[in-house]
Length: 427
Ligand code: EPU
Image (cartoon, rainbow, N blue to C red; front, side, top):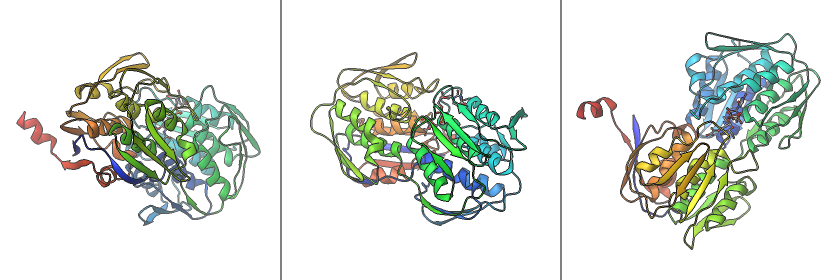
């Protein structure tokens, strides 16, 4: 097992380069199943969720290899068995994307119920509703979801609420359906636009991605292409917040500033300075940081995936902040860990009430999920003393070399191997 050990209190200074977007990459890697030739994907982040996607493709018979650190060559023509192995599906939410892509290509998909971060109940009823609208049937037996169809036929799909995964899966099946599909109340996140750009470059006909209504005309043949994945909005936001929390001065490179607007706006309200350039943003602090209120919303609102990190920052901002997040049932599981570090944070339903304290103090804590882990790193970086974060495998699902990138910014963060059995015996 590994943990991060952080000696806090050092302002982050320097430049950091953001990697490819996790949530675009997991969708685009799965989308290669729809391609009739070989694809080269660039700017693929080296994170464990991508390693799982690659394993799933290989288990099904695809030829997949990294030809450079962040370049992936994928040829899915050899896939014969459209079945995702249980253990792999269980370890990642994005395994649900294999339902849409396998259904699109083979008209038959068997995928165990997807896992992923524990943020409360995460059903996929809207995905199934979309598949059914396109003419597919579904059954659920022994923990495996099977979706199959003789023909997929374009249809109107209306989502009851905003769903990123549902929108992506609907696009996958619709790309291979006969005729026109219209997705209403579609999600608008940047990774949906990136996925549509990828599929359109292969020859798909998808219009309106990034708006509420997406229109897709089914296409028989999708050609092989080389495609570079967009930078990760959430990784960028995490470094921006870390820069502010440590009262540092960081240039975050390889970003699309437009994707960061909601994060930039909140940081400015708190009192940080954010300078925007073409492909980078600089964050620094010149005055005391103060409270703000936040409500997470689908894009272009403030992203739920940044809520824990911002809450860590607000825990040392002057005044009382109210943070509302009702996108998932429970995205406040980090609160107890932050309290161990001296934060004054209480959860009232879907609202975190955060009373800013003068400083946090280092403590042993556990990452309860990916973004909770990022929040604890930020807390550890600005706390006095030593913070030890266990269960960092959650963090490595979505952040490429986060410890190395932070060390380059001057952080004192080490990766330490430990043995749970030894700890248990010594207690
Ligand atoms: N929901 C349903 N039924 C469905 C689909 C969703 O009830 O059929 C509910 C969910 O339980 C949740 C809400 O609708 O309460 C929104 O879920 P959504 O489908 O939008 O989320 P997702 O596709 O499961 C993706 C990201 C998450 C990110 C959310 C929201 C990926 C692989 N995951 O999840 O990313 O928080 O969208 O933006 O793209 C992360 O990166 O840390 C992460 C959790």
